[in-house]
Image 1: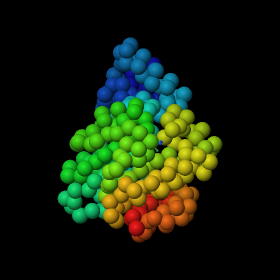
Image 2: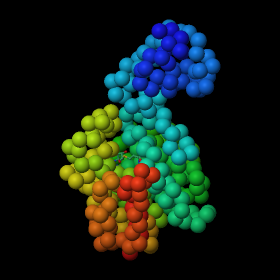
Image 3: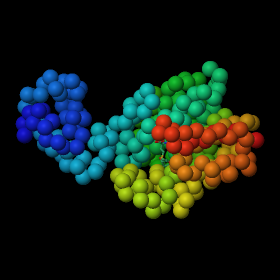
Image 4: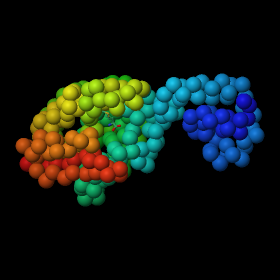
Length: 261
Ligand SMILES: C[S@@+](CC[C@H](N)C(=O)[O-])C[C@H]1O[C@@H](n2cnc3c(N)ncnc32)[C@H](O)[C@@H]1O
């Protein structure tokens, strides 16, 4: 196998994006330069990437990049790969406040920083804080920053003790321990995925503690599993009002917004 065309016809998984990555060519250029013979080093890199992809490494961990909303994010095996359904949280947050309102935002469990960085980039006058338990994830989030964001390491609300926010957002771990779906996610950090027997351990902690860290009538916005909404409404109804439920673009229950009573 020598030319782009030889590789394109090989049937290897994600071969076109892998060729684009190695050769720095667009899809159109791959076709218009299909007779291009790869150099020894290009072949070596591509064969290594094909092997990784065949063994199940997600494409984003090979490329080190994933698009989210209007930006491209660095990702590593220390961070969850951003999911398109999380863009729903951005749409909901952008609709909450009048234009130019100087919202004080906390993004908890920021991972690669997608929520904090996207909202800070869209709203330069927002004051944004982002936290994560994983210091390695925070390093990745910092590398993605386009505006000033305060990054803090620690367990949920520990790093922001005594602060209050207009909006707290989290896409926390919410998969049940032992869920068969985890077999497909072995390359991503387990600490970003699971939260106890019913997947709600972290969501319970966040809902219980959030009122102490929200300003008067402040908002809590959470992503959750497709079958967890009813239970979360029950948890929220103790200290929150104006509970609004949202479905993702696949029509699955996916996020919930509530206002402090
Ligand atoms: C589902 S991932 C979400 C990452 C990112 N916000 C996103 O939407 O792609 C959950 C994140 O919560 C972090 N996390 C897990 N337990 C935590 C804890 N006890 N305190 C703070 N962050 C935690 C993980 O490190 C991970 O980055």
